[in-house]
Amino acid sequence: MAKPALHFPGSTFCSITTTAVVSVRRLLALCEAVRVTQSSTYPPRVVAATILVLAAMIVRGQDLLPALPTGSMVLPAEILGPDDLIEIMVPYCAELSRTFRVGSDGTLTLPLLKHPIKAAGLLPPQVAKTIEDALKQEQVMADPIVSVSAIEYRSRPVSIIGAVNHPLTFQATGETSLLDAITKAGGFAPNVGADVLVTTKHRNGQGKTESTVRVIPVKNLTTTADSEYNVDLRGGEEIRVPEASKIFVAGNVNRPGAFAMQGDADTTVIKALALSSGLAPYAGKDAYIYRIHAGGGGRDEFKIPLSRIMKRKAPDMALKADDILYVPDNNGKRMTNKVLNEIAGFGASTATGLLIYR
Image (cartoon, rainbow, N blue to C red):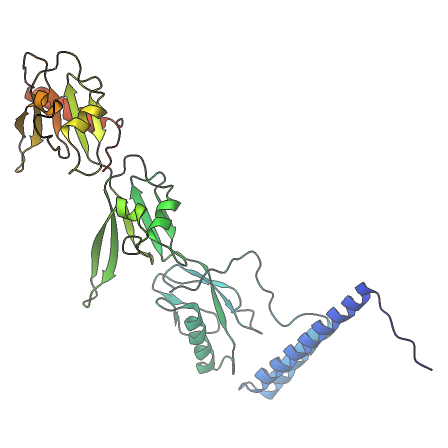
């Protein structure tokens, strides 16, 4: 006659299984703790007392392994630096199983260890190996198993300022590109210039800090997928997005003012007049460009045949950054130095105007 099969409710079976797993886990932990304790150089009485305490913990249902911290997010493994926060896990050692912050000198000061541990310049697994070696060398543990994870990075800052919507500083973790940084900053502002400047600092052979500035055209960055322009960021970079240069239009035009420009080569008199809503009635046949003197100390005056340019009988004239285009009335009155200074001051303080794109 066949023996009747035993049937357990689902909850009872899970409870029994869980209890068995926990008991086996605790028993294995006790065996390992006894092995580690016996391999130490402590007196026999200390070893015996330690084994009794561990056995009592098993009987009372206490776990020998430290609980894992909750609420912390492990970040991708990057090279560590000063002020980074890491989490160390060492079984059977609650003193070391918690979070530690790398010191400003790039080292870790850990309990149970006499000497600091170098962390700066190493990956988390390399730091774990260093801690294991130190525990063995100082005879704290015979065969430790150490794991290290990054919880917070503070040594990989990337700053972005200038013509972006939200200038900020963030930590470059994982794969971070220049476009990622600009996206974090809310994208380019309307008055963005023609180039982005990426400054990278590094140490030379003599230990001195040097800076390398890379100029990246905005047009190439946003219209191509070339990694030559969308450079990778490793931390420590400073991204500056200069505002576009301005030109000033004054005189007999419908909307005089200061206008941002992008790309000096394609900014011309006709485009400047289009931005200023065209010529007003009674505009003169000639106009004047006032350009900052190359050696400083004032502006040079250039007379241009405005009427012939508008009728396409003369080539259009290119404008440069900070040029003042003045359109007099038909009596040909020129601008005085006082008026020039007032226009330049107005342009420096105004935030209105449109962009001239290539």
